[in-house]
Length: 190
Ligand code: 5GP
Image (cartoon, rainbow, N blue to C red):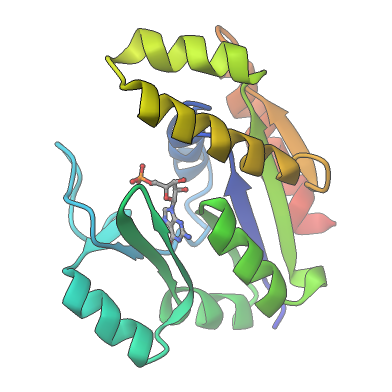
């Protein structure tokens, strides 16, 4: 195995999506593996672009077949990265970049050799700043907000041991895109 698997971790609302889009544009040579999820597609989401949208039954079947490198439940839905999308690319020496939630990231850390794995953490500020952003974006229930806070506390544990922390505070997206592309470049060569 000679490629590098780069995991992107960041709280919901940290701007991972915008950074990943910028990276896709800049780096057509990178492999962006497609994951499976049981959640419904959002408006504008295309089957087979970011996700294969499958039923819970289909997902369970794939677990049985050991098709997943890791899988996890998040927000009541199942998410899993497919071995077939990742391992051949790593074997071929390619860079693979995927955003996952923390339970999945922990599983990947136990199954991919250390020297082939790098974590980039997207830092969008303190919980208070993130909370303000979430609340401004849409109406949200108190329980949901509490769940997000709990997740944030789990996610932030990755900041300390990440290969690189990319800062994406309000109004800094353009700089964050540049820093993110650079972080991936550095991770590949580390
Ligand atoms: P969303 O539903 O907003 O696309 O994603 C929800 C969360 O699931 C995000 O934190 C995202 O990083 C994570 N996620 C996306 N794909 C995977 C995957 O294949 N495995 C795991 N464990 N998490 C994923």
